[in-house]
Length: 101
Image 1 (tube, rainbow, N blue to C red):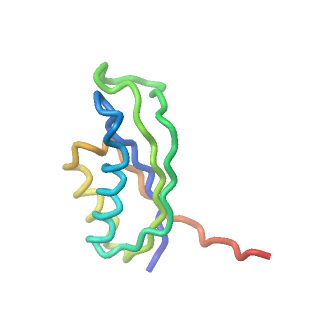
Image 2 (cartoon, rainbow, N blue to C red):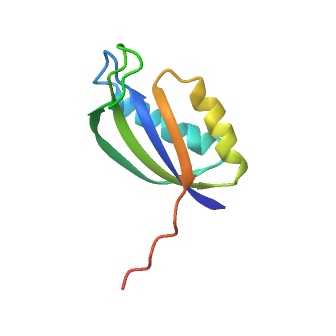
């Protein structure tokens, strides 16, 4: 199993209160695909530097570190491409945590 870091930009257009439910759905989707969620880091809502659509001028950023088989990445990208809650998704390899001294 490899460790991955997923940066999710959630669609917050008109719904600020549904962030917790969207994060729970993301964790559930990762677990359903066979992954193991290690940490979830909620970040703030940030305005986009380049606005392509006036409807989406900002997004709520969430960083999720999870472990899974390499095939899980393509499966998650396909699932979240259909989701209305996720505006953008970037998945990269996460470094192994350094042991505490």
